[in-house]
Amino acid sequence: MLKEKEYILFDLDGTIINSGKGIINSAIYALESFGIKIEKPEMLRSLIGPPLKDSIIAYFDLDSQKAEEIVLKYREHYGEKGLYECALYPGIKELLGDLAKAGKKPCIATTKSTYFAEKILSYLDVGQYFIKIAGSNLDGSRQDKHEVIEYCLKSLAIENRKKVLMIGDRKYDIEGAKKSEIDFIAVSYGFGELSELKKAGAKTIVKDALELRKIIL
Image (cartoon, rainbow, N blue to C red; front, side, top):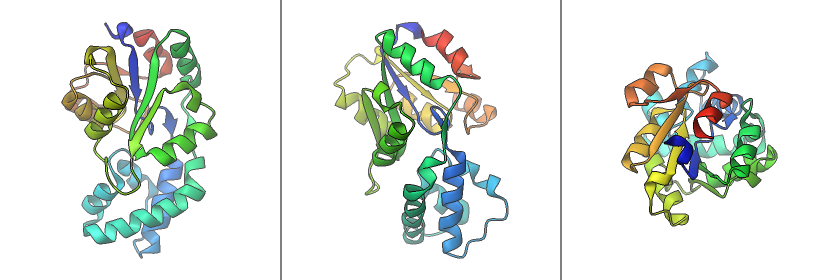
């Protein structure tokens, strides 16, 4: 059934790329610019996935205005350095090439801004494999994963959702896929804990790109 999917929507962070170093370094820069000292950088891994502003508000108990100021400072560092501190997960480039050869239509559906997503994929020389790169807007709109998925589907004029598959590493990817009524595969090599993925309802969880390839090709 999954091998019959035509449109393959990939999350970006934790699914296509390991972007932890750049995101965490940029978050530390932004937070410490406002006097928020981070003793253990690994504690910021939970910020990877959901909209950054929402995570900052919840995690550090800050108001919306202060969180927005931190996000702007984050983007300042991320745009200059952080976005380049990433790498493709093993086997991903080969998988994307095989999908293209098989006539599949890979897309990106991420809550990272479209602007940064495009720059990263170009830097890693894989942007050409995606027929659509759908992300959030820098003005703060389209931040929810469900909104991003819907935007992607509408942009491509996809009416038959049975042809669509979402692949991601966090519960937000699963929840977004469920709301959009499309099938989902979770990857365990990203930033989401296995317990998080199972609790969110992931029925198929793969450990690497090779296993993913066997399921969708």
